[in-house]
Image (tube, rainbow, N blue to C red; front, side, top):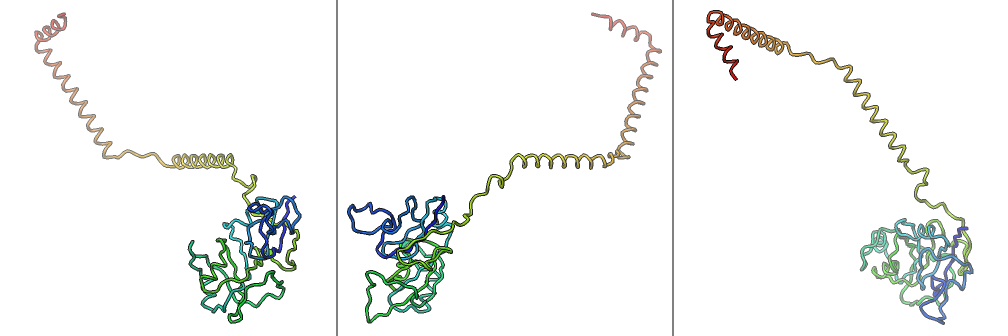
Length: 276
């Protein structure tokens, strides 16, 4: 059975179930909060960040949530050092130049401190001479530590970072360190076999179309009257044939007359024909 879990990750918790990099490490992992075998994170959340994580036991659901090509929106609450002005907010929205390229357009706005905010342990580093501000920032990409690098590039270092939402899922009603099961969404996917084109039907359709075209062409040819010969051409051919026949008859008659007048020549021709 497919499972989907939302979890409110506390600060300083690794976004994984084991700390394989350091045996005996005191660092907390997800296993300290979630006793649910077989699930794994659909996307990461840095150790020093807090907020919403989604976990599932199904690879297709995990890919749909975490793959950047699906461009699922993620909203962050960002506490920064200083007071960003309209120009800084506009720059966050248009894109910030980072070492690995420009960030995509985003949604950004100044916000009041969240009413349901929990205390962080340890608390943020605060300086009395420099105020802090909160920004709501919505992204559709996932560069490494992107939010922190964006605010730092504009001169407003991030002091606290909380992921509030992933797509339609939010932190609302979920206390820090708590988790709960969610309803499984309908995942868009490839067409079912019954919805795929039927190659046999396509071939039969093409053959039927060819037969119709052939029949139509035959009907057109049947309706087209036979081409009548050109009158002038027919008259010329008839005249040439008559002339040739007359010439042949005239030649035969002339030869016959000559033979009657000269029997010797006729006899000579017969004898010549009998010679071996």
